[in-house]
Amino acid sequence: IQEMSYLGAGFRLAMKDLEIRGAGNLLGPEQSGHIHAVGFDLYIEMLEKAVAELKGLKIEEVFEPSISLRVNAFIPEEYIDDITLRLSLYRRIASSKTHETLEALESEIEDRFGRLPYEVKNLLDIMRLKIMARELLIAKIEEMDGRIRIIFSPDTKVEPQDMFELHKKREGKIKFLPEGFELDLRGLPWKKVNEEISEIMKELFENSFLNYPA
Image 1 (cartoon, one colour):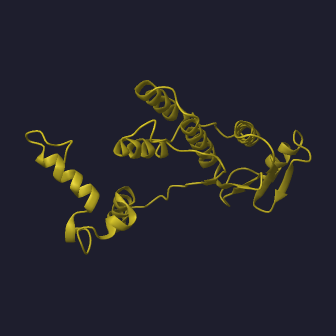
Image 2: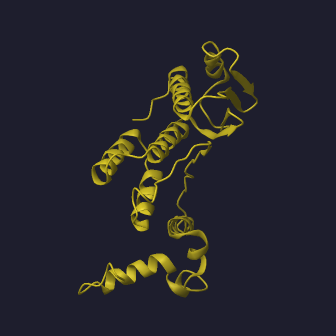
Image 3: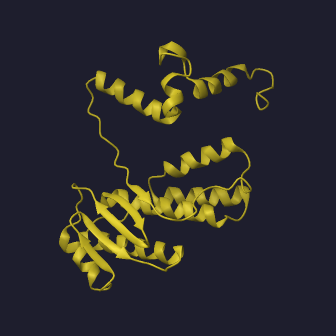
């Protein structure tokens, strides 16, 4: 309300209210309804899918890898105190599909708000891993007591032989699993962990003759 106190701002204010609370009984049982439970972005995505299904259109599911690593990766309040702006940047980072888009966003953030804190750099590093994981159809990257477990989707184009090639450089550090492999990186700082995972993914692209994401 403070932001939209100028003359003629009523329409924008109503649209913001629509985003936050929903559109009443038209889209849910109450004005706060389903949109309150799942969030605006996810609600709109679900609504678009439902409309597409009713039209008989083919719906392609977006593959989203799960990444769970022990690292501080967020936008600190001290860096950007406006919560609306922080949420907007989180959405833009999460929706980045290429390294090129992410690098442009990184430059924009640094230009607007100054030197990036390490937490924001970590967040962008995680997103870079996610972009590569999406292309390789890696379903999960998770850390367990310093061991990094990489699990592939059944639909991945990475062959077992491609994974075995990784063993030549990292003998004793890799343990193969039925759905992927586990990498022993205990005791290493996040920078080294990120570099090792990134290097492994690049090698998988080369070994599998896949196009590295731009």
